Length: 405
Image (cartoon, rainbow, N blue to C red; front, side, top):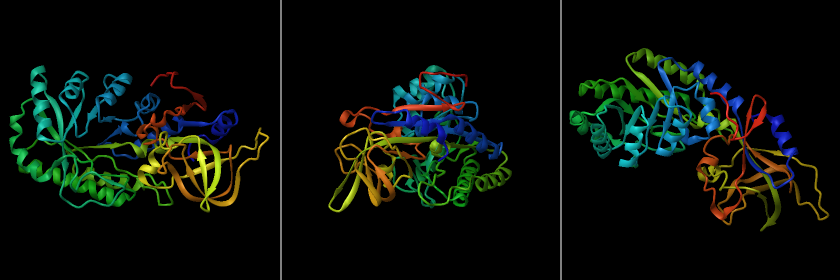
């Protein structure tokens, strides 16, 4: 666990009701992003992909340390512009509508990652109406092989990007879009790759392909966005070797000194700064298997069931049991940790062995700072939302507390 353990213990001890909360350690987050930036070559621009966690406190903490923010909706653009009217914003996503693009132009988006010929037509016409010229990258769905990862968005038939064969037909016609300055290519092909060597090799493929197309079609190429996709080990796998990855990026920067390399990490930046706490409300046995029912679940923390994995957790024992009736308890048993929803899919860890677990104890799910609350269906069954707490300067703050970025 990387968040402040002592403060979490203190928080649990002060709660008397059915506990459910997210806690994000902004001190850890700031230290983490500083360490990442110190290792990245100066030629690499680090964007934070806010889809991982778009809380204002998270964005404010990262603002002084990242080059910009990667967004995928008008709502996300508005959240970034609420904390800064000048930080670079890169606008991606396969479904940009006319109204979204019009609003993005009003909010001075820096780069548009365009994913189809129709997106080029829409943005070009809107920009011409406003007398603007805007910088764009073309998102590519390449045909070369990709390493294995948890999710694959390209290198196969998906809704993302421009098929490489179609791209080669489009590139000779870029003069038809006078309001669009095509400055580079965008590759975001996979998610949660844990192998630094294959990830660096993938970046090499991206840079080589982009440079080849620039030469072939006489393009003024200045930026290649290599996407995110750097993984977090949720199980017993080795962690991504970021130092090794940066060493190989440095070599690539020497080979392509004319290019800015952009990266848009989300999960790798925020996953470890957050935890999800939820109280055990009941323990029971059905058909010979034990189940712990939690005061929470997929509607708060959907990541485990979405990825079909046992999410790592720590048990915080609470000795107090202020009731006259027996306290359900298991010792040295295998148990499935389930949420409170009326679906058998509401599982956060399946058949895990615990030394002791009692009703009233608290499960603390680690590495919950990314794609936890922010991808969950919050109002299914209309249960109460969890508390959202932040640690800054070794103390708790709430979402209502603001501070200088």
